[in-house]
Length: 317
Image (cartoon, rainbow, N blue to C red; front, top):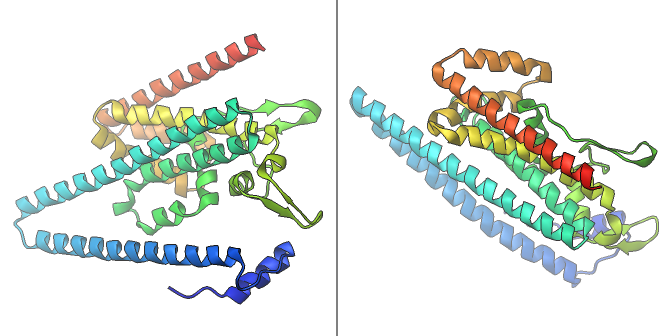
């Protein structure tokens, strides 16, 4: 791994924040520690990647040497193994999102808007990852391959915005109108959506005032509410999708729905395109039709839950 340029780091910090770091500064010690940790992680990742590639090469070479009937069995087994692995990743993402929701609740009760904002933004990134994972079932046959998934996986901005694509699955959005024309519709008030997380968890330096600002001072409640509400309604659609896929014949449904997911993620679609896409999808087979019926049922139940929740909120206010 290429060594970090300490002089470049100190120059960049000085230019951006007006802070001069010396070579024995504790901040540079943290940089060195981070470098060593990242290097170890990348070495493990590279070693595991080589191992996986070697295993796949050996597996497919072995397949070509078998009879056609045996080859079919091997391919089906390999496909099932890939399906199970991706399914485990989806379950892990769901668990992480669920844990984020629990932390959001705790932050709300303690009136910590910066924690609310940061955790909700992390939760929205997890939703974006879940849509990428659903699309990944089509990647073995897609023209752009697995690189597409990994590029999105490490791009925080893309993950945060990709979660909004669940609105193509169901055109449900919650918007809040405040005083003086203030509109909260999920659009970040900062330059990039991932900045919400960064300003929520880290001390910020303001060049204008020459002062350090804590996350509690940096984040206002309205910004936190904007992200929490967005995470809430997007999670309802994501949850309904998961219920439809898991309800019956899940192996087929994950593979089939991945075509819709990858088109949503990779094509220049409009909301008005979705009814025709769904209609064509339903006509393919009985299994496709049952999948779309299950999706419609759970999406409708999710919308009803939203209406019930907001009706109670309105009556109690």
